[in-house]
Image (cartoon, rainbow, N blue to C red; front, side, top):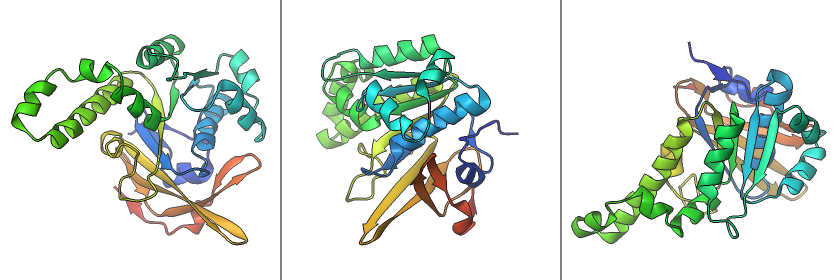
Length: 255
């Protein structure tokens, strides 16, 4: 039987046939205003409050203060959960700091979370592209360049770097959500065009603004080790966080 980690969001857990398979790494993709950070924080808060599971939020975009202020509007008392040792937020400014990977690794090892959020993979990919991390993770680049075209070797190198990072995350005893910006155009499901293939699951948040209102929907495009509803699930960002109306979607189960 598959061990599952409940998100605590009823409609989403139902669509996932009971929750995310434990230790899965799930990409949360979406454009601005879709609620990626809200969904991720809700995942951690629900884990801490409902299941007493430690949650770690590693941010490269919003400061700790900004994330706490955002959480307040949904009635989530982050300070209380921190005092109980159930939740921790770490902000890393990759413009000022050169050891993002090392700091993240150290934080995970020390806090030992059962639930992990990295926000965002887009920023992380940019970081790795301009630091020595790429050289450390791909030692045979020069050899590849002698036998295959440059554009192909760069794609392989990027995939190698991301694979190394994601495989390292899998070594920790945590179920993780990794955010990424969804390109406005094109068919890719991540900013780097690779993470969706490497991660165990992909959830895509869509937003359509129209005159007089807006429409939001979530689609579970991929989730290893479980059946799941692959339909578009309407959701709203309500007073207490994200609410998914799974009953309004076509109930199509996919392996």
